[in-house]
Length: 355
Image 1: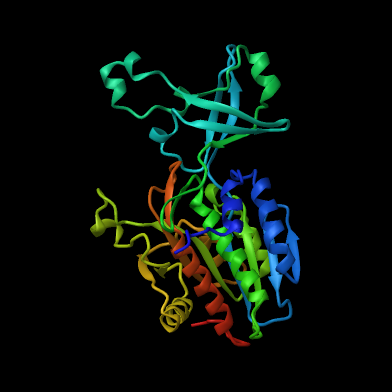
Image 2: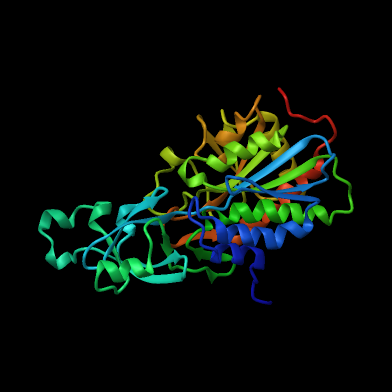
């Protein structure tokens, strides 16, 4: 049996460093892999990428997966050349210090290490606390403020220097599965639909959205621009199959259990039913989560775009979200793509999922 080979499109996205507002590298990967398959391709002022297939089709179907990730933004250099920063997106402060990072600058990448006061130099009470952001710095080996600012500029961004690695079978670890897997899934779906012999009725727009981690900003404008009848957001969701996770509070979902289909106020019931029907027909394993309010995903913005959009949400199970080493089973990612393809092919003209 040959060793599993992850798709190059996905590994290229995982290698791209693309904090919110600085999605340049991920944009290029999406351009390189998806643009050749599209009938029309556009970029916008927010940094989104919009790939269209069958532009005269009906209904208009939008797939959205965000390509931005967590990061750090340089805010200050002290007299000794240590760099201070603020966070881009929701970081766990316990995770930040002691990491190798790469800062993207106009003159290329600069390597550094996040530092804080060593535990030996702390009082007992301080050892029990998570450090505040201003108590952590980035050390790039500079000896003065002048030297540091000759190499790095205020407003440059950093990401953890943790790459993608398969750790067992189809299970991989990476810095930014959240949400490079979603951007991959929507782009790969369009690529596969472009090769389908069966004619699709729908106009399909696959959008790699920007700035989700700081308030679903790219999805907000993309939903207005695309004006879809139906949309499905693809993001990651918590796999709750690890120690110290109370299923009574967080539900029951697992790595390798298949894509997670959301039900609740953010989700159009007919879209959910169609997704579930497609999964059952193709024998694609799937899981269900319930969410009583607008979700923390692009679906939140898309649902209330313009006059309202029939919206669904598929989440790819993930352990250790917003840490430098997130875990995903790539078979769940593949099953998500297959489900999106089936959903698109199932639509008929005039099928708007109003209820």
